[in-house]
Amino acid sequence: MLNLSAKIRTETGRKVKSLRKKGVLPAVIYGSKTKVISLELDSKVFEKIYKEAGESSLINLEIESQEKPELKEKTAKKEKQRTPVLIREIQKEPLSGKIIHVDFYKVSLTEEVTLSIPLVFEGEAPAVKELGGTFVKNISEIQIKALPESIPHEIRVDINNLRTFEDSILIKDLSIPEGVKVLTQAEEIVALVTPLEKVEEELEKPLEEKVEEVEKAGEKKPAEEEVQDTQSEQQKA
Image (cartoon, rainbow, N blue to C red; front, side, top):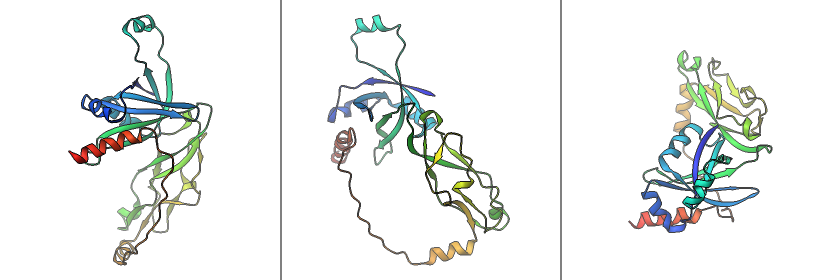
């Protein structure tokens, strides 16, 4: 399990802008039985951890309190308390794509959690190589439920058995680790290969406009105001 150091953050609201200029990444941690705590991380260290862990791997968050120097010396020999967390959400600056805020979710190692796991496709489909078909990835992630320590980082999908246009890979065909329950429907198609002419026919069909009403959640996410303030300032600049 990866380890990540963090400190209790006292700067909030618009003041976090000055932190980011110093290479500090604002974050929060919360959970079902935990109050929201504001944190600060090293931006470069977090980006490295995020590339390796993504949003589906457990991380040991080592939170260091803002103690007075004399108190730190007395407690230096004590073992740091590690909190198991998942990266629940990251927010990025629209133009640069730079991470500007992170939400951590504190988990209980004895309680199952529900989350989405990415699918990684491996191999080469014979129906593409030999028949000239087009590989179609129908879904890129599946929803699972498992104890935190059983959560896989990813699910690998072997596409070498897609030999004809009639072949397909379903959710039930995936190799799922022990202790993991798949919540996505078993008969849902993960991937298949279609003839090239069928793809061209679909592209020639006129697009149908669809309008959907989206209801906004009434409950704001932790530290949402900080992100909104930052984006507003960037737009004014």
